[in-house]
Every structure is written in structure tokens, then in C-alpha cells.
Picture (spheres, rainbow, N blue to C red):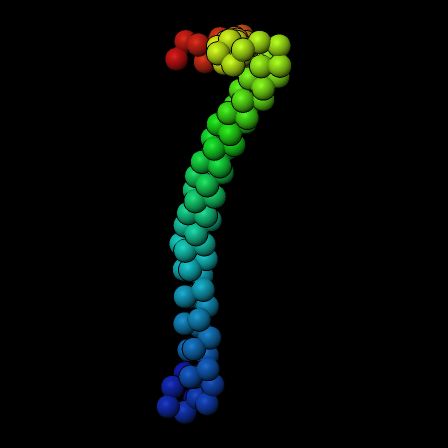
Length: 109
């Protein structure tokens, strides 16, 4: 009688396969999406912090490089404020460009 677990020789392997299938199904529906979300958050935060650090370093290098170029023709004191002015104007132009590219819907919010 195959329905009786005491006389069915395949009862234990079938039960183990059923348990494994149910546990795998539950894990695939719960743990995998959470794992993907957590990885996306971690790598997104790392990328964001790295991007901010890269932008800051580029601005520092650009300012110092501009000071070195301007200092060839003027004093160090004048080169500093002229380089700050140049970088400030450049950043302002980038800001004006980005503000002009935004859509009307974003400006209402």
C-alpha cells in the first residue's frame, strides 16, 4: 500500500524532496529580492559617495591648476582670487545650463 509511510520505501526521499522544494520556493520569493535590494542600496551609496569625492577632487585640482597657470603672469595673491572667480563662474554656468534644461513639471513641484 503506497499511501502508508511505514510500507512505502520511497516515503522518506519523497518527503525530503518536498521539504527542499518548499524551502527553495520560499527562499526564492523572500530572500533573493531582499538580497538584490540590499546590494543595490549598498553599491548605490558607495557609488554616490565615490562620485561626490571625485567631483570635489576634480574641483580642487582644477582650482589649483588654474592658480598655477595664472601665477605665471601675476602674483600668487592675484592668481588665487582670479582662479576662484573662474571656477565660480564655470560652476554658475553649469548651474544655469542645468536649470534651463529642467522641464516645466519639475519646476512646479
